Image (cartoon, rainbow, N blue to C red; front, side):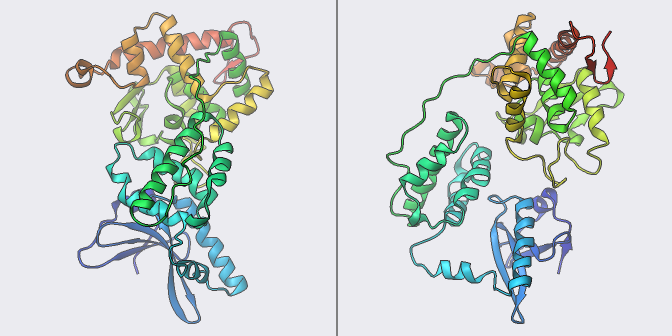
Amino acid sequence: MAKALLTHKTIEALKPLPGHRSELFDSKVTGLSVRVTENGTKSYCFNYTYRRKRRRLSLGRVESITLAAAREKTRKLRRDLESAGVDPGAEKSAQRSLLGAPTIQRLADEYIERHLPSKKRQRDDLRNIRSVVLPAWGSYLTRDVGRSDVTALLDSIHGNTQANRIRALLSKMFNVGIKYGLVEHNPVFGTDRRKETPRDRVLTEDEIRQAWVQLELRADSWSLGLQLLLLTGQRPGEVFRKMRWHDIQLEDRAWVWTIPREDTKNQELHRVPLSRQAVRLLEQRRKPTAGSPWVFPGKDPDNPVVENGWSKHVRSLWAETNLEPFSAHDLRRTVLTRLASMGVTHVVIAAVANHKQLDITGRVYVRYTYDKEKRRALQAWGRRLETIVRHGVRSTRWHGVAAK
């Protein structure tokens, strides 16, 4: 029985073996394993003994459930088995006996296997399936989900844009289900699409100062992440969930964060020059994150923080400062807008933001990455932000250095 500490890297490295299935057990949580089929499908499984017989219960494919969730589910199933003596697989077996009534979990698995590989961008769907659809409906039978359930789920989502994305995903999932005989109708049909209003919120210098001072007072990881976002202008998801220590070079004053193409929105490798102010913040994260590959690890150090966890932190910031509402993405827009006001050209701002070039010249022929120009722009912005924060606030400290 092969056993090792399961991590994203070890799971990704597992390869299918010709002719039979393979299995790797987790050394951290008893009973948890990853099973790899001959065609490469990987699933988490709970292995247990019931009435002197060894049994295996599938917890879901690795694409549809996180490692942390699989570990927590395994612990709960083992506790239930030891305390109540009930076979964990009995309920699932009974559910499978209901002909023509698969669960939303199975529908999600079929969608991931049959439809997702054909999509250019898979990450958003995988994330939304894991964080929204399955937590709400994973155990539901597909036949029991109606239009009112769809409407209720969409109403529970913060922001019309995200609600529309979930609506589109659900519609695609049910259409795939119809195609392969898992469902008879699409309950999304007839529901209304939310009206989206393009955001244009940009923080004033006084608002930037108030927000920064409050983040300094909080001095927690969420606050430091938002400060890094204000210094780099990168996407919130990239700062909080994609920033790994091995992608950051601080030695020999290299001062650059390289985001791999698989972690960027436009699927292009992106180098983010780091200002002196950003480097000081990162140095503060080294000791608290020792042993984790992530600059902002979650409760499980093998994984980054939860998706969109920063949104709650930003909302609480409004109440403490009495500022007009803004989002983490508005901080990014603020940085890019401030760069423009400082005279930075639009092409360099687009390079800082890692926006995809729309014209054929930019997409195909011009491969220059503007690294020098990006560095000058972000260094200038770091100095400007430092001036904004220090101006008129004598007690403010800038990364532990008292303002003068």
